[in-house]
Image (cartoon, rainbow, N blue to C red; front, side, top):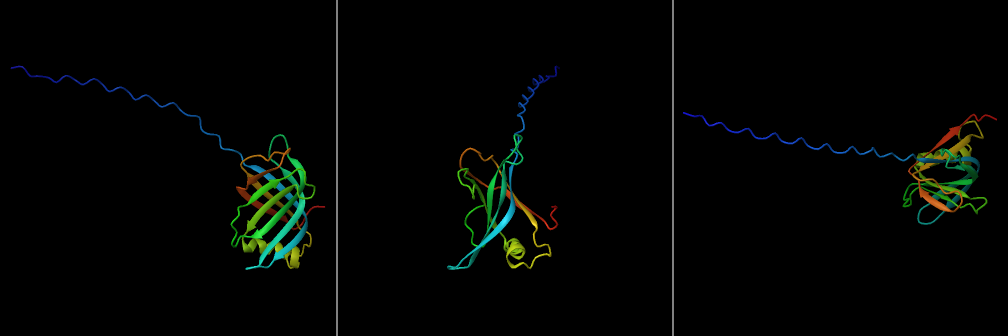
Length: 165
C-alpha cells in the first residue's frame, strides 16, 4: 500500500522591506526678544474693565538665526486673558519708527498683577528698576525687509532684579 504524501507548499515570499523614509526634520522655533526700557498703562472702561500695558524697548528679530538678528524698536502689549478671543501675535513693520516690532500677549491675571506691581503701583520687590526681557517663538522667520505678522507658538519673560550696570 502506498502512502500518499502531500506536496510541500512553496515557501511564502519574504515581504519586501519598506523603504526607510528619512525622519522629518523638526523646524527650529525662531526666537524674538524685547528688552523693556519704559512702560505705559491704558485702562478702558466698557462692559467690563480691561487693562492693557505697553512695555517699550529694544527688539531683536530672528535672534537665534545663523545670519544674526535684526535690531529695532519694539513694544510688548500685555492684556488680561479673561475674555480674550485673539491669539498671541508678533507683527513687524520696518517703516514704523517707534512701534516697528509689536508683540501682543494675553496673560493670566497673576502674571499681569506681577507687572502691575513692578511698574505701576511700585509695591513689587525693593529693586526699583528691574531688567525685563520678553521672548517669543514663531515657526517662521520674520522678513526684515517687509511688513509681516506671525502667530506666537511660545512666549515667556525673564526678570532680573539685580541688573548689572
